[in-house]
Image (tube, rainbow, N blue to C red; front, top):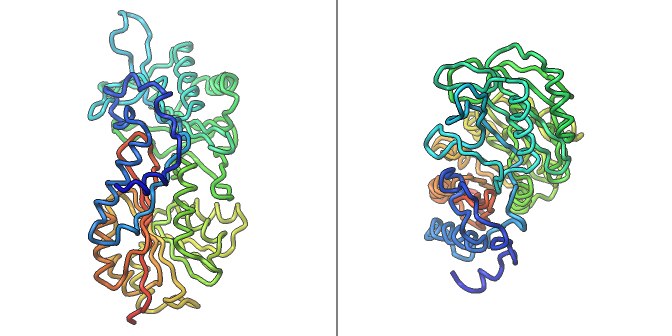
Length: 414
């Protein structure tokens, strides 16, 4: 890597002043925790440059965007509960923490360096109350026990806390007293939800829920907008870096008030709503998950955004129809496709339909650059070129890296 590129990294990332995690070898979640943060960024930068070599000029790869303080960034803390192993006979003991990599053996992680500290306090408070009131943890081997998981979501900017208690029974004795004591111990809690999951499964959440305390959701800010987060809503776990990611995507789209933005794989509408608020004339959000679209519509209404519509529809089907029939009031030269597919990437059918629709720009956000490169090769064959590649470190101390790729075609072959 050339020296000038390295000098563009955010300076003075704290690393040596934080001791290494005591359980990293057993937990396995943070594969880079013992590597200084600047070195982590350099490794990820080199990885992206190598992946895209041959597809774009090296000058297209921008310096990775890292965090100023890359610790305690995960605003979602998920902790299972289980009978503690090795307790003396007859003793009531509860274990919690993270599963060791590739196993269901719990590793205590009271001092996790990446999880939100308020969220960890909530988990420890729940465990303490289980011990106090002899609330049995779930036993995976027998299917017995009451409390399976605590899922804690913390508003990065609002500070509001949502606690979801996953239980192995519909009945929750003393639930009012439990919630009252839990809120007394952690006053930041604004909502407690009971989720019922009686299946013997590794899936955390069940289908039945009831609100035990508060409104049933929390609010948090992202890119100047406010989003409603419920127990099953998708929401990025690192809001600070999500803002950096979305800002990079919106900048790449070069919105000037005339474009129709197609937000494929839109989820709960976060990136599409940011685009609607930052220069898109119109946003069309597409996702096949009905609950996600319901949340997206609610988020649009909550923020007073009227130039964004969200549809329960397969994105490929929509693009095929749009390529054949057009989109009312929109021309290809004024269309921007924003896509954020799952880790498996997009499909040939989707990419072929996108090329047939021929938007002037495609902004491809990916949590798996390997499949992003594969899909980019398909788009290159249809006349698109890569203008910029922006890596973003969404998950410090892990080997994951997010990437925003801008592709465009100056002359459309219609």
